[in-house]
Length: 135
Image (cartoon, rainbow, N blue to C red; front, side, top):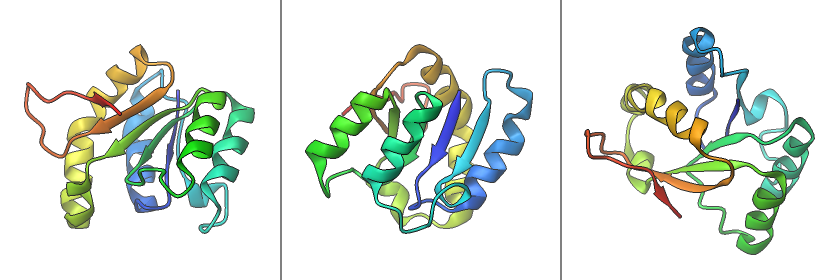
């Protein structure tokens, strides 16, 4: 599985989870947009370009509403699975985001193993009852 962090999240989150995921055989890559594209690259460009490597699991706070129909179509065509972080994530400080995303990561990996395409909401709140919601 390949994971791609959108530019609205710090590169260090992607790089930290990449290091932590080295013990996960199913995780091939965890990269940030800035590792492969200019930081201001348009969503439609990178969504389509990533398709050359097969489907990716995209982590983003962006709701892909700038050009919603075209972006959703690009996601569908490429077979990407997108995890959109709840709006609460935006108001959190860096270390709180890092801690919470690390807490969610094993559940996200498990969900990703069972998902092939689609858009899911990743809640801020993490409890045994917390679930990914299809968007």
